[in-house]
Image (cartoon, rainbow, N blue to C red):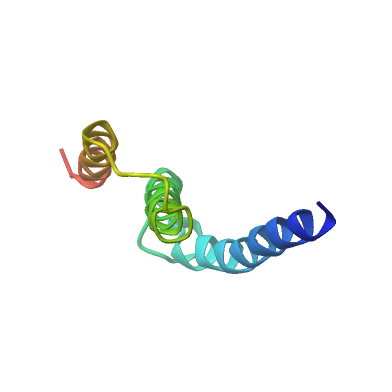
Amino acid sequence: MVAIILISWGLAFFEYVFQVPANRAGSQETGGPFSLVQLKTIQEAVTLTVFMIFTLLFFKMEKLAWNHLLGFCLIVLAVFVIFKKW
């Protein structure tokens, strides 16, 4: 149990180490090209994509069903809607 906790916190630590500087560099407030909403959208889309790949590679009993694919398509659609200049 201790090993699992340390591994999960280790993964979260490395995500945080990359996420905070990326948000600072990418934010319009600090000269970057993205709004905070766009940065959060990118973060969520990347996190869910990595989680899906991790799950499929390491948990062989999990299968990708049609509703999962539909959900990911809707996430891609959400990214499009948020980034589209209306």
